[in-house]
Length: 141
Image (cartoon, rainbow, N blue to C red; front, side):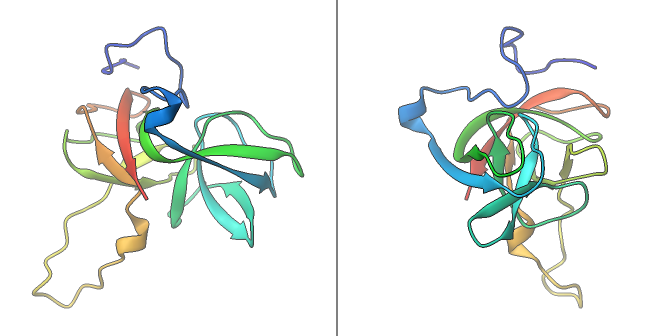
C-alpha cells in the first residue's frame, strides 16, 4: 500500500479541505458504516456501505452503527483506498467487495453500451498503481 496523497497524517475518509469547502450531509446508517466507505442510498434517507458496484452518493467521514447518523462527503476532496490501478484525472465509482473505489471505464458513446452516469462518484486526483493504494478523489455529486 502506497499513500500517493502526500498527506500521511490523514486517514481514509478524512476530508482534505476545510469543511466549508465540502458538502457533508448526514444520513441514518441502515447498515454499519466504516469511515472511508463509499456509501449509497439503501432506503429513503438511509445509507449503507457499497461492497459492489452501486450508485454511490459519497464517502463516509466517520464510523456509524446501524440507526446512527452517518456524515457523508457528498462534494469535496477526500482520502480513499483504491481497489486497483487508477489513472489520475479519471472517473471513479464505488465499490469492490472490499469497499474500495475503482476506475470507471470509458464508454464508447457511439456504440451500443449503456452509459450509467449515476455510477460516477468522482475524479481521481492521483494515480494508484495497485489495490489498497491511498489516493484522494474529488467527489462531484
